[in-house]
Image (cartoon, rainbow, N blue to C red; front, side):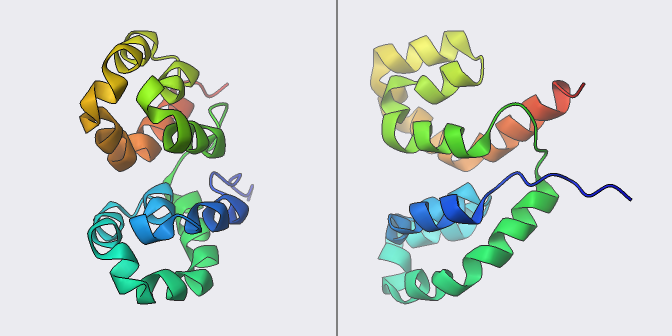
Length: 134
């Protein structure tokens, strides 16, 4: 049986954990509900943020099982969203030219588009990778 290639890295999880008190690493691993909780409670009052240091490897394994790996790289897309989301660079990277330009002209649809992408980026990438399979 061929093993499925990884979609999410442990390294990226720890990198985003630095900003984890706002839920970045949880959003990256597809845990939207706890990502929102971490965002509004500063990492569950920093206690959950510290505990997540131990949980990141298992979150990476779970994300690898849930999402389709492929040409569109999750790590790069998440870096682009996290640091350049208001400019729509992550959308341009995924081949979504129209919405990428729209984000550029509206600063990420006035922030609402960025929030939407934090909640749905994994699914968007997984669907794109599924469609691009060779």
